[in-house]
Length: 130
Image (tube, rainbow, N blue to C red):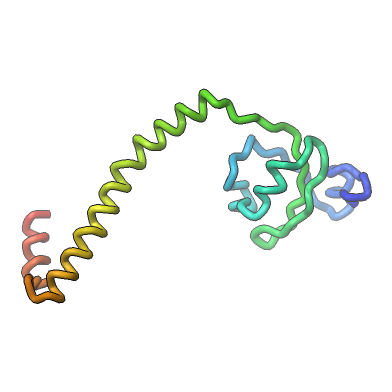
């Protein structure tokens, strides 16, 4: 029905569904009652305003949609967000890299019989400190 030019409200009424309006969604967004919309991202973010999208099944429910509003990316806001994201993510990525490095060095040294780690002693020390 949607592809034949009927509007979303008429299609919903025909199948005893309901029409809901969501807040603006970001890519990889989450929609109440449906969950993640990753599979619909490409179409949702390229579809002309008011044109119905291809219905899809998400979380066992059929989602028929159209786009009422689109907010373009503001380059200045994007720069601010990128800097903030970088500031938040950098320490975690450094820690992740450092932990991987430590694990690799530990494995090489254990294999070369340069060190021997007694897990029971290590766990006991960790418990005393924690």
